[in-house]
Length: 80
Image 1 (cartoon, rainbow, N blue to C red):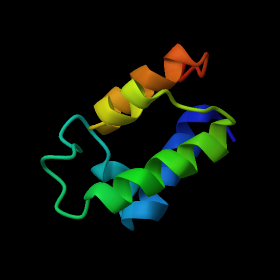
Image 2 (image 1 turned 60 degrees about the horizontal axis):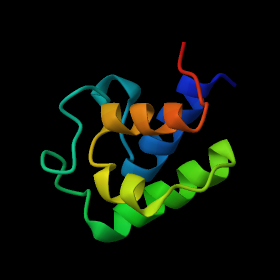
Image 3 (image 1 turned 90 degrees about the horizontal axis):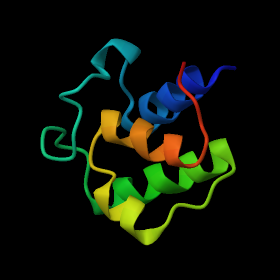
Image 4 (image 1 turned 45 degrees about the horizontal axis):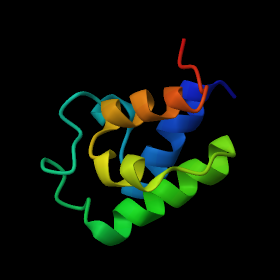
């Protein structure tokens, strides 16, 4: 599975949504179900999926679908 599909799978499974809902508007502020508990679950699932360990700063700034990809790129995860 490529990285984008794996990344999307984590979001779609955790939020129980379809791929087409993942866009620039999928943010902590715009998604009602994205609370602190879901946020930590998201971080844990992504760390497991990509075998990374996020720094605290990255966890705190991981507030959107798009920003998450930028953060993972810091850990040499490519979405091309």
